[in-house]
Length: 125
Image 1 (cartoon, rainbow, N blue to C red):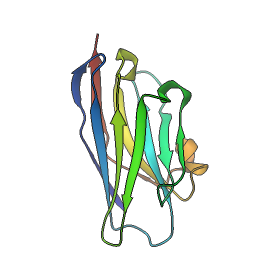
Image 2 (image 1 turned 135 degrees about the vertical axis):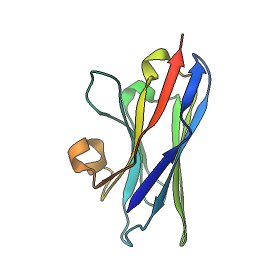
Image 3 (image 1 turned 30 degrees about the vertical axis):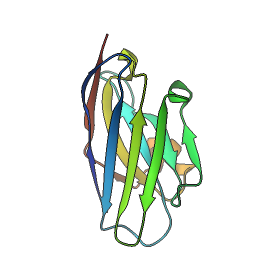
């Protein structure tokens, strides 16, 4: 499985940004996908997750109400998006797309089976 993330950039506080992650070579069993982020000098932390069919979602407390995760899961494609609104300087980090067997496992880095390459989000004040 390969995860290709895109959509990062430099924005001002209060702006919006959308990240996307395309999965290729995917497994045929249901899985959860989501996002982590890592700021300089800090540990990688969970941001959001979504179930294989998009019905269930999970968010870190720090982003609830501002970020929305969605998924387009079909026979020939699997894409996860993260709509980021009302961005704050503390959202500045490298964002990583991730895939795990379940949403519970996707809550921690050790539960992730596959990682994307990371995309940088910088929010200026």
